[in-house]
Length: 208
Image 1: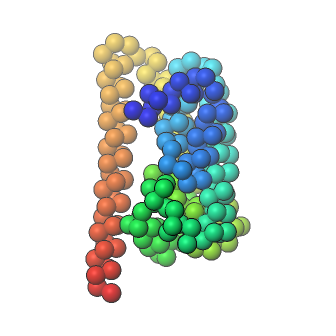
Image 2: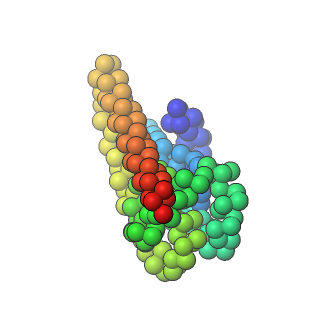
């Protein structure tokens, strides 16, 4: 659904669409930044209108810029702002508790690995600011995660786009169907893991 909506924006605005969507998602606004990156990579492979290296560089820079915005919002306004207005960006009490638990246990590593998890990709930088992580330390983990994420998903989308462009008829449809199934399966796995963390937090709260 998101891919079909984003594709016309990629075709019309190219790298600008990738930059804006990824930056806003990284800053804490629930937008499909990863879908924008993969869609742009597939578009580059199929049409050749955009260079895949430019897409990867733009996505990484947008992720770093957006994460720094989220970090400074969390650092400047802190937990009161998150509690008061978090629901506007779908950051409810359960997700807030999950973010607190993950940062308490794993610290700056969440900034890097959170780039690969939908919920944390949106809010990890905000949590880092709220929890008082030093900016220099944040920037190192943030930049490393952004570059790795842009490379992995950018090249993955590009390779898939090249393969799909070579196929036609039933084989092309099968490849597309398998890709969509893989994305859906990954999303369900991430949601299931998030729910497990929620249940663990609730059990620990009941004991205290």
